[in-house]
Amino acid sequence: MDRLRSHFGIESFYCRPGIEGAHEKAVFHDRARRLLSVNYRIVVVSTTLAELTRQ
Image 1 (cartoon, rainbow, N blue to C red):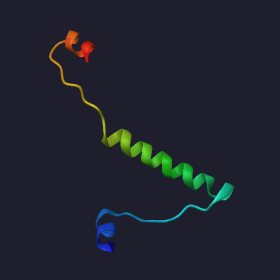
Image 2: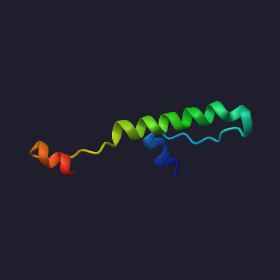
Image 3: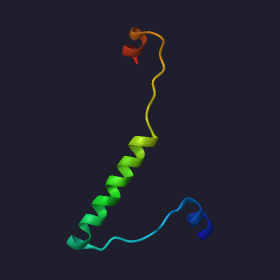
């Protein structure tokens, strides 16, 4: 498991509970949202505008 984490550069940590850790949780969710929006996009393939509007 350690080799997998070091290969992908994953660092595991836990956020502090309560109000003290609120900014840590926000940073985590912001990074996750950015990762998903940049790397995973839905691409619709169509040949005409009419076909695209039907989808």
